[in-house]
Length: 427
Length: 142
Image 1 (tube, rainbow over the protein chains, first blue to last red):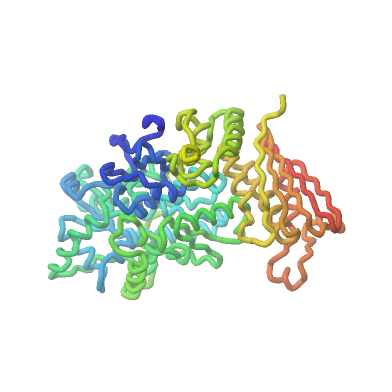
Image 2: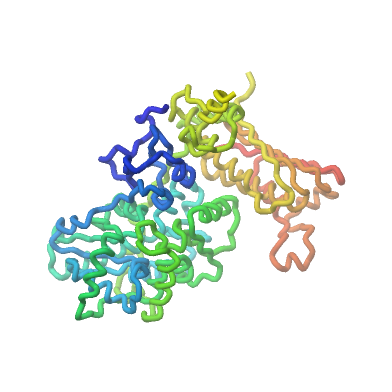
């Protein structure tokens, strides 16, 4: 059995993590481990354990766990007490969570009713990003196909595994960061002291929680707290029912709202040749093809780790396809004319990354190339002795991963294939 | 002492277009584990993928072998297909066996072999009509 200390363990509660485990509920089945797109999960001591440096926050493990042992990390609703002036940022996908919603202003007014002092629309901010993207495509300042950076799980995946594609990344701030910047400016203009301002994002997924806490493409985070959709939903629904006066707060057009579903961003670029893939497995296929020199005739590529886009986020309450349909419906209710950066008198630079996110080298077997080669040679020898059935009994997602863990020193050298051992005993 | 080497071998299926890219994917993944610079991996990926596709489309499949050394990768793509009658002509950029109407649709641009040569440091091709084709490519890591 492997020692717990040898793999970064989920019980290390002080560090900031994407997902946490309830060890009481985890039965040590291999479901999450087998489906993790970066093979970040191992089963150690009968419990799932995450190597966080490999986690992209896609939420697949949370989605798949039938025992609900995995949870997204996020701030509690009680954190509303942390600031005097509270601003809620609403993602376009959030509107898809509500049944029979006819006016997005009801959601925005509801947020004021549950204790926020102002609201900011991430969809509106997305329109400014769209405007900037169109300008970048016109100028040709980023080589095509340009790859969207709106999904932080996909961005993390590219930073980890597809280094050669990094010059194609759309180097604009995430719409949520743009929304946070705008909302902060509004509060300051009203005379609210900086230290009193708290920006809260209601997040559909753990990847966004992590990205906002760490600050991706920004010098320091613009968002102070990240709440879960389900926490907000439970408080919001009763408050929305009691509303008597609905103020017109919404500024977003249908373009911004569509960012909440797959293809929304790609369509908004006005590109003639664009791809929008959703679901992490399909996104990986697109990234592999790009790496092989394919799809070079494309102008823009949108990739969403969640099926259907952000409405498929694991922290949402509604089925992705139902939410998607509602978002579609709501687009009819919104103005068609998109918000532009000229309308708020901001230059393009205001919407760009403040610093490039750093590439990560999490898959290297050794810093030294020769040592890495030796380990790979040894791995090939070990693979010849394994059954290659990827049963997961050893606690690794595949025979290949087991062999790599062995040569990489992640598990003790005397670790054996459990399945072969069991079959040997039977005989 | 023999040189350190990892050998990866793939049977490239001739009747499953969807499986093309499997060998390239595995080789890329291995090179990433070795910490090979991404620009080198890209060259390997392009050459390997083009080669795989060629084997699927023209030769009914074959065997792809990648030998990874400390400073280079040697790729051998061997098939028992119909062979190339005029190798020099096949290497001409833009030359293609695809009929004119297919080319008008944007397929068969005739850049497969020229690109494989362009992205590799060493490239050789042997072909015999009715026997098969063997492409050898070497890429040195920076």
